[in-house]
Image 1 (cartoon, rainbow, N blue to C red):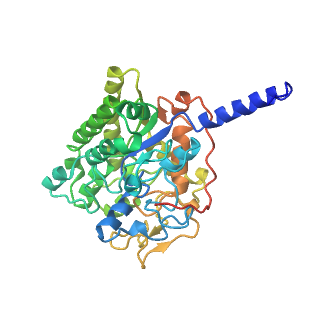
Image 2: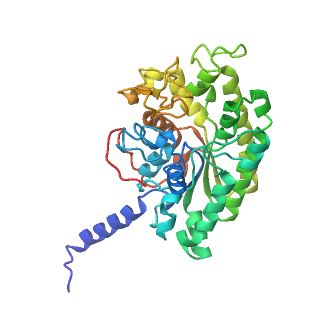
Image 3: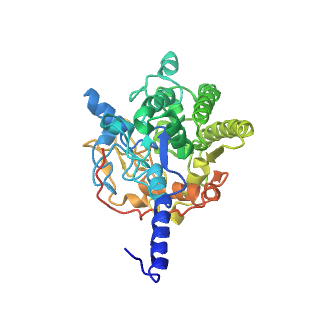
Length: 393
């Protein structure tokens, strides 16, 4: 069949557009994620269902109501930071490992998420020795890393293919470590005691990063801790305590935020050391703390007309958080306009708040080095924070 010369430029353009479309799914071929409830897209839901144990409250409405119109296992009313990242890179939302491991080979370019709500960096044995029992899971960072290594044959096949996959993947390391402190605080441990945990948590994260680099990882995003002194849960737990000092600007607990900053300082020091040893690896620190502090300092500026401290969904009290009446409990109440709240359930943020953090990190200046300077391919703008039906595991 002869092709008209006048059609050749059009054919060339179509081929170029097709190639561009295949490459424009972002800078990375897939996303591999580890972490806790800030990144879990349904792993704990699957683990709980499979074990026939009592399902956690976030497996029920109103969780997921804003975007998915059902509870997917995400600890929010909608999407998480990892979802916004996937959308911005033109990828499908990253499925939970527990939801796909029995289905064989994953779809190429999709990635996989090993994050589990409630997970810690340090293993369960450490916490149990301190008298702290994890009420959710024993899927610590080390366990998740073992899942990942065990799943490689089904994800990518040969060792060379797996190394290629890891090299071209965006690796999200959490957030992880926050629950090492959260579970201990809820168990009654004093903050001063928790400071001794921090170097151990950082060393565990560093060990996981180094292992992933050995497997071929070249781009890793490592988030710091959020300003936990602004959490409705902590504000409630320490309400009226003599030692508590509140920041006049934000209303957050000063001592707890200083603790989070201590964790973040040690983490950044450790990441600098990894960069020196691995100059060809992109070690990206994600400043969750200061990205979130923007709306804690100026909630109205970001559309949080109902403030940044009081939970949208909860069991009452000054911050609408009650340990005995969790969000989704029949006695809990839910606001009608979650987009005007930064805090969702006392421990987790709303989709709107996660969107602010995502934008500040991956389209702004709150990563070191800046993420958008490493990514020179087309980045698709995620859809607006709005309702949309979506089938999830």
